[in-house]
Each structure stands twice: as structure tokens, then as C-alpha cells.
Image (cartoon, rainbow, N blue to C red; front, side, top):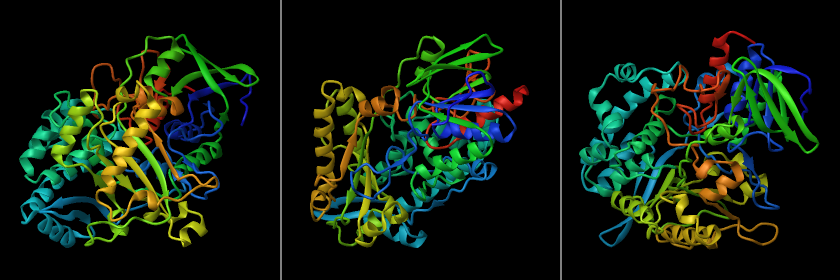
Amino acid sequence: MTAPEPSRTYDAVIVGGGHNGLVAAAYLARAGRSVLVLERLDHTGGAAVSTRPFPGVDARLSRYSYLVSLLPRKIVRDLGLDFRLRTRTISSYTPAERDGRPTGLLIGGGERRTREAFARFTGSDREYRAWQRFYDMTGRVARRVFPTLTEPLPTREELRRTVGDEEAWRALFEEPIGVAVEEHFTDDLVRGVVLTDALIGTFADAHDPSLKQNRCFLYHVIGGGTGAWDVPVGGMGALTDALADAARAAGAVIATGHEAVRIATDGRTAEVTHRTADGEGVAATRHVLVNASPQELAALTGDTPPPPAEGAQLKVNMLLERLPRLRDTSVDPREAFAGTFHIAQGYGQLGAAYAQAASGELPAEPPSEIYCHSLTDPTILGPDLAARGYQTLTLFGLHAPARLFARDNDAVREELLKATLARLDAHLAEPLADCLATDAQGRPCLEARSPLDLERDLGLPGGNIFHRELSWPHAQEGTGRWGVETRHAGVLLCGAGAVRGGGVSGVPGHNAAMAVLEAGEG
């Protein structure tokens, strides 16, 4: 823990040491500003951390956030980060049963192999050609939209001109994504594989008129200008450790164990009151950057908080002694689990699961997707575990809104976990439980987190992983020049709840730093 100097006035005080706050700290400190970061916990990183969740087991898991797509290489270059990503060799595998036999769709491993996999699974080339056309369209949008995330907010019409494709604009920005999915594809499972990117952490139907599913889909397909989702080498904590190192090297003061409790501002200067185990202190500053939720910002400034956006996911971390065998013997488990392993994500299944959850029931067939990071990055396992063939599995369950857990969080979490793993077991040649490793106390290496758990552990309002519903990446009424401005002059929101926030991107942190530097004062 680094203690700030009690009487010191800083050019910028950053509330929260998550990855966005660290990005802002590094940019501002490198520009010669004096910077103080106040972090409530005894470590930095927020949700983007690597931990050893299982006692006595040398496996470092990306516990809450898993893959990287939205982090601009510009930020990595600008800050000189010692941080690497690895591309997954397979995009996805989706098991299914057709004509009474186990089969599945493996996407990846090259164009020829993917085309042949589509033909075997669907019986023709039609769906593969539709796949190519659809993702050629999203790829064009990605290449044009992604660079704008670290620029001042364009207007809606400016972004439309940047996209320069009226068909793509209609499909992604104006009509429910379900329309485009149904126009392009006929196979139910292929439709579901496409739709799932619209539902990560977002509780919506394919035809939701709010288009919140479109916004989720957009952010999942534009990352890096390609839409690829890569594995951070060393786990997600490697990124936030590199950011903390860069901020400190540039002169930023990072004070862990310091909880900001109040922001007072007159529009020209501000004071941030913070609390430690030893009492309270006050830091004076010109700019305050809040790397927390809009609800926490309101609590700090005394404003009325906005209603929380509901989280809708089940997160499960596991360590296996070996990957399970599959009923579909045509695919190697090391390939099936190398990308995104889709469970119960047919288009009809996703619609039914949403309808059941919206009516207050647990989905009969809970949809989920699974990632095995250790296949791409074995460094997260200790040498002994790696040599013995151990693997990590991370499961992300969809359509699990916080409201379902309100009556009894522990009981509902356990019930949903059991049903979710049963859907996975239906495609395995052996129960997953037989493959689980055990910790030092002999307990299975498995932990599950509901939206209510994430709210408690990480301060995510409603357990929403994006802090609020995702926004369009263009200006709207009151969004300001960079999308980080608040109604208080000199107080900026640099967390996931900022415009163009969400995911592990660093974009709100970069944009808040740019807003400060543009202001010109210390």
C-alpha cells in the first residue's frame, strides 16, 4: 500500500484501480501530470485480475473477465506495455445431435476446413456462403468503426457515413439483429451461434425493440477491426499488472487500501475524501476520474443514482485433470475446447431460454459457452499441472438475470449450475465431474458466481458486467465530446459505464485522459 501525501494537491485523482483507471493514470502521468489512484482493495485490477481460486493448486485463472478483443493496440504501444495476446486456433465448436447421432459444427482451422465442416453439418454450402457474406459485412464495419473508439465521439450521421454501407447500417444499427440473422441463415444452430454474440451479459430477445442486443453484438464483432477474441498471456492480471507498472514508472501514486467516500467540487477544483483503516484523508485536485459505476459516481457526488442495469450471467471457473471425451468422436477435445464451446445455443433454444427467464423461471436448457484458456496459454498452469495434462475451463452462462437469484441466491445458483453442467454432460462421453481436479482439501475445483455475487464482490450494480446497458459508439444527448463527461465540471466517468465502455478495452480510460489533456490545465 502506497500512502498519498495528506497535504498534496494532484493534477488528477483517479477513483478506482481497475484497468481503465490505470490506463488513464499512465497516460496522464506520462504527460507530466501528477496523479493519485485510490483503490479500495489491497490490489489493483478490478475485475481484470488473475487469481488462484483453488487452495493449494498452482493455477492462475482469469477469474471474472476472460478474453481480449476491444483493447486497441494503440494503447499498448502508447504506454509501452509488456503484454501479449495469443490467437485461438479454433473459433468455436457447437455440439448437437442430428438424425439420432452426435455431431457438431467446428469453425476455424482455415477456410477450407471450415467450409467442409459447414457442408458436413448442414448438408450443403449455402450456410457457409451466408456465413462468409455476413461476416464480410461485419468485418467492413469493424475496420471503420473500431478506430473511432479512441477519437472524440462522432455524431450518429458522422458514424453512418464512416460505416458507408446502408445494408450494414440497417442490420446493425436500426433493425433488431434477429432480422439480419434470419435473413442470412436458415439452419437453427448456425443462427444461434451468430446470435450468441448479442447476448453476452445482455438479457434480451433477438427481436428486442430496444436494440440493446444489437449494441452488444456490435461490440463483440468490431474489436481490433477484426472481431477476434484473444487469450491474454499470463491471464488477465498480466494486463492490469503491466498497466500498474506503466503508471508507477511514469510517476503516478497508486494507493491501495484507500476507499474514496466523497467528492466535493465547485466546478474549478475538487476534494476527494478517502478512508483507510487508520482514518480519513483528503486529496485536492483539478480533475477527478471515476473508474467505477454510474451508481457509485452518484453516491460519491451526492447525486440521485440511475437505476441499475440488470446483470444476466452465471460465471463458473473450473480446473480439470483432463479434458472430457466427447460423444462426437469426429473432433478432438483439444480442438473442440480450444475456441468457444457452445452449449444449448440453437436459435430456438436461446429464444425459449429468454422467454422462460423473463417469466421468472430458470431456463429448462440453460445456454452457456465455455473457454479453455490453458490450451492457448499453458503458462497459467504450474509446470507440474501442465506436465500432467491439467486444463482450465471457464463457463459463461447466458439468460441468467439477477431477478432469478433474489429469492435465494445460493440455492438458485446451485440449481442453475447443476442444470447447466447437465446440458454439457449430454454431449460428453463421460461426466464432467469425473474430470474435475480437487484442491488441497479434496474439494472439486469449481466455483460459480451469480450476478448477485458479482455485485457483492466487485461492486457491479445489479451484477451487470458492463456497469449499465451498452451504448452506441456515437454521440447522444448529454454525452459530451469524449463520452466521459458528467454534469460536474472536472469530474469524469472513466469506467465501463462511460459511452463506449464495457469489456476489457481501456477505451474509457484513454478517453478520460484525453479529455483532461485537452482541457489544458494541470
